[in-house]
Image (cartoon, rainbow, N blue to C red):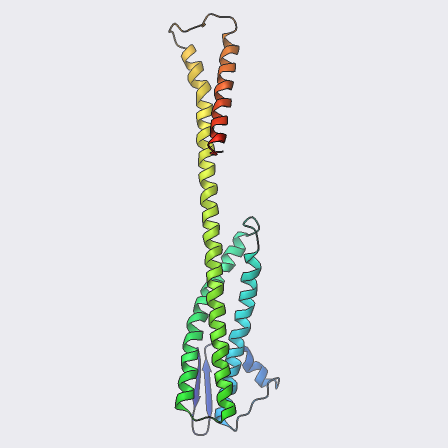
Length: 219
């Protein structure tokens, strides 16, 4: 929040944190006219707009850069950064909206020279562009998060499927060998090669099961 108050003989600005452009004004890097209050107001509004635009473009470039990364290249730190940028962009959307309303109200309520009025109208255009940039970047971030959530969900489902299949495959030998370990008459239980027959049977069941799953595109 940056408060600008114009009095009869003064222009007062108030902010919780000192904006970067104030230091540049103090250092003489920015030409600032204090004798004409309306020009002073327009200059301050232009500097505020410039700060918003600079930060917005920086965030937009960063979001666009991450947009082209594969999901494997997106680290936790980058996802955290995206969420932080999403919060900033949401704040900027609100700020751009109300700043434009303020500019329009100033134009209606205060009589400016034509040149100064054109500057304010340009600020409204720039604010609208910044607003649209923020909305577009927010949509991009939302798409990235949505894609990431879907991919993680699919990976989790695949892992659960593989673990389930592995459990079934492991349980088959235990079930078959358990039958032959019981004191119940079973086919070929006294055959000298029954152990190898059981191994071949288990292997055939495994292979058939895996081929079936591949055919159904489960694995």
